[in-house]
Structure formats: structure tokens, C-alpha cells
Length: 125
Image (cartoon, rainbow, N blue to C red; front, side, top):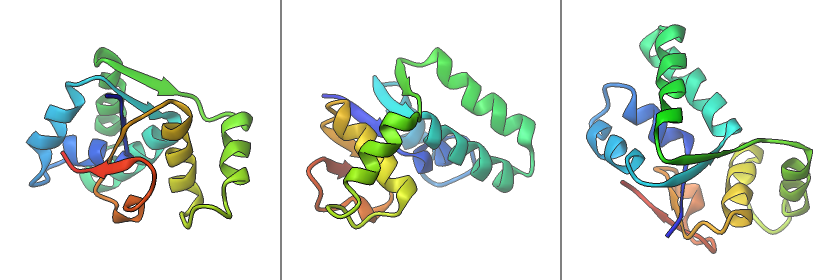
């Protein structure tokens, strides 16, 4: 079972959220994410913690985890654009969802309910 981890999971794992421990636990499993999620997470963590160095170190620490980070490139962008009519998602969410689709993910880990009712089951940690 391959999981895609959305940006909000990283944010909750590296800030003082009520879900911090559950989110950190899910990061200890094998997962896939993409560079767009990491950019989103750095921005949000930096804003919440008011510390861009902490945000960068938090995301950099993911390299020690059992994860695959997919680059956002023109092919991924155009695959998402091709699916704009099929999915009622914002562009960033669509890119993340298409990353999960193209990489055979069976679960989409996110607190974002916009991912409900799609081919890949959305779960929360």
C-alpha cells in the first residue's frame, strides 16, 4: 500500500497542532509526495512558526525518511492539465492528486476533504 502525503500533514507534523503525533507517525511509514507539497509546507510552516530556517530544516529532515519525492516538471503539470475537466480540484490539489494517480498510490493522506469521493481513498493519520 503506497501512500501519498499532502502538504497539510507535513505542516501539522512540524508545528504545534493537536494532530502532531499522528502526523509524525504516518511519516515513519513509506510514502510518496512531490516538490510542490514540500514548497507549500515550507511556506505554511514558516508562516505559522514565524521561522523560515525551522521550516526549511523540518522539510529537509524528510530526506532521512522512507519517502519518494516526485519532482514537479512539465510532464506532471501537463498530466494535471489534461485532467482539469474530470476533477473539481484547485490546480495545486490537482497536481498532487495526479502525482498520486501516476505513482500507483492507494491512499491519499490529507485533512483536505476536497479529495473525498475520488479514485484514491483519502485517509487521515
